[in-house]
Amino acid sequence: MPSYWPRPMALKSNPIVAERMNALPKVVFSRSMEKAGWSNTRLVKSGLGEVVRGLKKEAQGIAVMGSGSIVSQMAAENLVDEYQMVLIPVVLGSGRTMFESLGKRIALKRLSSRFFANGNVLVCYEPVA
Image (cartoon, rainbow, N blue to C red):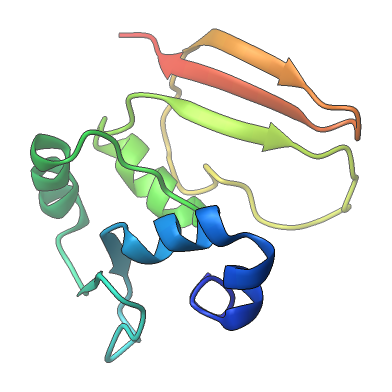
């Protein structure tokens, strides 16, 4: 993300998205990073649950992009209100799952789905209490 959106190429090819991505507040959870170099980015090294609970009180919406371990940790603490996943029809044969370390079952109710011409499917679910 920070290797693309702040760059001139992103600003030229996707100016509206790039402006929004660069302007929005961002939180990066990392134990190894020393500094977050992207504008409007806050680096958090611990306390994921506490930080997310605080963000949920402040923000109108939170999106987790590209981190199955963050999603799994949030799900374990019942901090996910809606799952929006894009299914891409490719069989990899191996890899990690978004919920591999969850350790509990969460029932989901489908809210919507959208099919794309390229075969991808967007599915949206909410946890069932």
